[in-house]
Image (tube, rainbow, N blue to C red; front, side):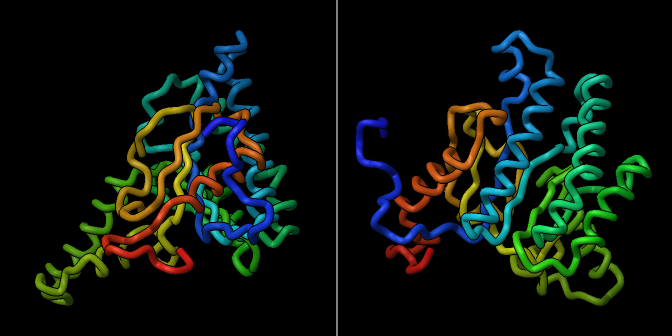
Length: 252
């Protein structure tokens, strides 16, 4: 819809937000390349966009914000870029954790941790432990994360229970699999946003996204801000969520 048409959000209506928003933060490198800047500058500006988005999500009343910060496939990138990304993660946690804690943000981490560097794993655990009792926005950081790998880990846990005789094969249901995922207590995302114009999930929350609304925005992640978030939520509000039924569910 063009800017000249009616806005996505009617200012006369209450601004109802989805409970859980997930974001694939894509386009840092292309943002930098378009400006003749090194990729590291794109990643740095991406961290600034993350700060703005976390703040906006809390102000808008979103309960859960999941960010795809580093995928299990990202390890194939050049070693220099991985070092830069890990450095940004370290600085983000060290510099921003106190502010997140003060704002009552609770940090959760999903993804494989066993093969992470000790200092990175400790930083992630520190962020979770410090903010464990906070009752504001829950910020879920998908780090070293891949949805297929998450489902495989769940299957391995269930297979171990079956092999040990603690679980009958016929007891394996969709609900049981969901309870063995990385964060089974979190609600499925209502809205998944991907920046940069790409239109795919790229191994992100494949199980949880079964009935999520997908919104693909053309801007690169460093340019994402509160206005872009509100526009995406406006598009979400225009959708009818039927969850496989014939009638849209009230309040969805």
